[in-house]
Amino acid sequence: MPNGPLTLPARLCLLAWDAARPAAGGTAHRPDLVRAGALVELAQRGLLTDEDGIATPVDLDASAGDAVLDGLLDLVRESCPHSWRTWVKLRARVTFDAAREQLVAEGYLRADKRRVLGMFPSVEYALERLAVVEALREEVRDVLRGEVAEVSGRDAAVVALAAAAGLLPDREVRVHARRLEDLLERAGAAGPGPRRVVREVSTAVTTTTGSAPAPTAGG
Image (cartoon, rainbow, N blue to C red; front, side):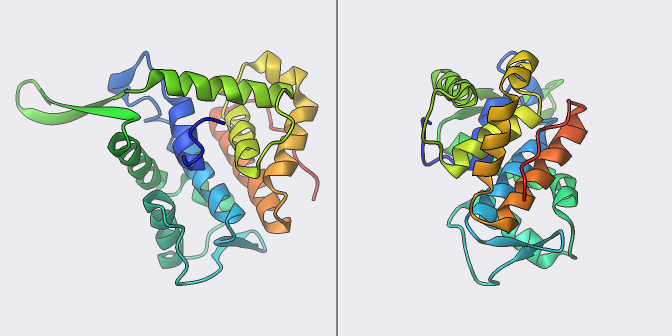
């Protein structure tokens, strides 16, 4: 996919951005999706593991080297134990806001300061690099259709979570249901922990959107 260095939460934030409604913040109502991406990436990197359904830090001193991911990792460390599904929604706006500010700093989004009624400070966000986001969306469709042979765990997770969140056309999701199952499996291929994480967070995102249930991977 384009923009390899972009993390899962960053990619999902851009994919869900509604260019027609910049004032609404695009994904302002989808912090759960961005949080789900961060949880999966931390699990794929081996920084969060599954212990009887609970998201558990592996090492109290480990770092992802990314402000958004490390912010969530610190939040999990400092909080009471919670399930993966709970973490998809619990204080998810913290992760979303961090991802959005990171994308502004890297030039993918633009932050325009203004005043409401000439008095109250406000910030409107808009896509700055629309062509990059369109390319990312096309790559997601290519992966879903099976036009990409070798798919990384991160790319597989992007497509699986995007489908669960209702970002992909319903018809294509139905036609490529088997492919989605394979992508879910690939996204959790690092082991039983990541596999369970992908299933749990994709289900949580699907529940939030009210979409049709996402395919579940075995294991």
